[in-house]
Length: 562
Image (cartoon, rainbow, N blue to C red):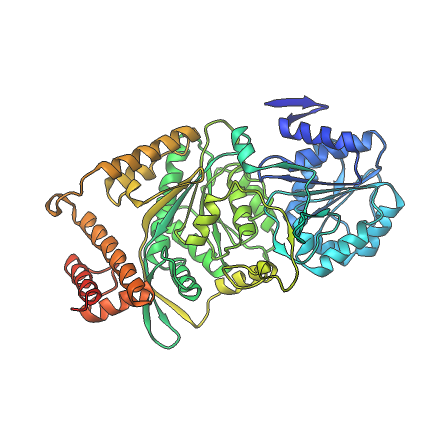
């Protein structure tokens, strides 16, 4: 439902949030709204009303990145608020400008000047993605120092808060009776609500597994399936092998994602795709693979290059197929035509995952469904299935084990730095071979296993779904495939294609390896290595049917002690 107030069309949640603000007229207000819901519009309409009623005379906006400074400046123009993205020590404000847009890092650089600016006139401070004020103690202290005198402060966020011990300035924390402090939002508009209102697109996640083989720093050759529940170090190595720009896994995933984009563009000609990479080397490699695949140059966005923001803005208004970025497009960037994504990064925190998915949920018309291709890593699948779950910022004691991230063993502030380090090439992992198999689909909180999308002609048909089905139609399609897969009898080997036979044998080998590993108290990767040493031959991705069957027989004999 769309309501209209002033000169700007408002969504129902925006009107409700504005009403709640008007009823309480608070000095501090925290609005939590899912990416793509329209937090910027809500904030600027509120700012316009406060300016018109003479509650404030000045507006300051704080953003995470330089690109968002420009985005906020253009959006403010639409409601008659004149903001400048060019503000620094000694520059002052031009006549007729309501205020500056600065980054959190910029606040730390000109704290005193911003405090003076805020003190001189009644000021509304808009803190966009306010969780960034907890990224660094110096940033949080600078935000508190600069904007303590502000007449009003509006904090916005669209992603889950981290669990750490750094309080975020101007956020209210309540004790729930268990000694743990949790943030209290003044208005919450979650992804689930936004889906029900058709404010955002639903997302279908296509998760790819496959056996990865790499050489360790001591020369050992190890194989593992990226979808298996493995020790953290093994999963990290398998994940890195999958994301190798030269590898077969990423090549297959990019090919399938481009096929989906082609189908989407039959109905939405300007639909675009985004590949999120771990580092600049990988990003350049993915861009090269896409050029070879499509014959077109992908837009490459590297945050430390001049003109990165201009590249994003140009892509947003163009009809180019693909953009490849490292982290520049992970948060707040508004490119509504993005409908197909490839999550080709090792970043694993809920915060980053939610930010990344947020780039694809901005809807333009009814019936759109976004598609995101990703590794079938258990942690990522958990994030995808729980996307609609809302989280508050929880402050725990430094010695509380709850502050530790279960993936990295680090506090979340350190976990994101660890994700960056893990994504960099290191001497410990030399990718050798990889394979990609569509393993499962996650949609609407449900997980649809591999038999829903078999590795044959039916998979090709499934990958051609144009991404324009209503959410109910997508769910019905997946349920129908699940029922068909469960009812179908296993075909005789003679009726299978060679490709289907190999896929079935690899799946059976993976099942045997997992069972053997549980029995012996080892990892599936070790089980695969033992079977390969006994039979010889290439990794499972390249092995023929006879070799795969031999390895299955080896593991079965060893499991029963014969």
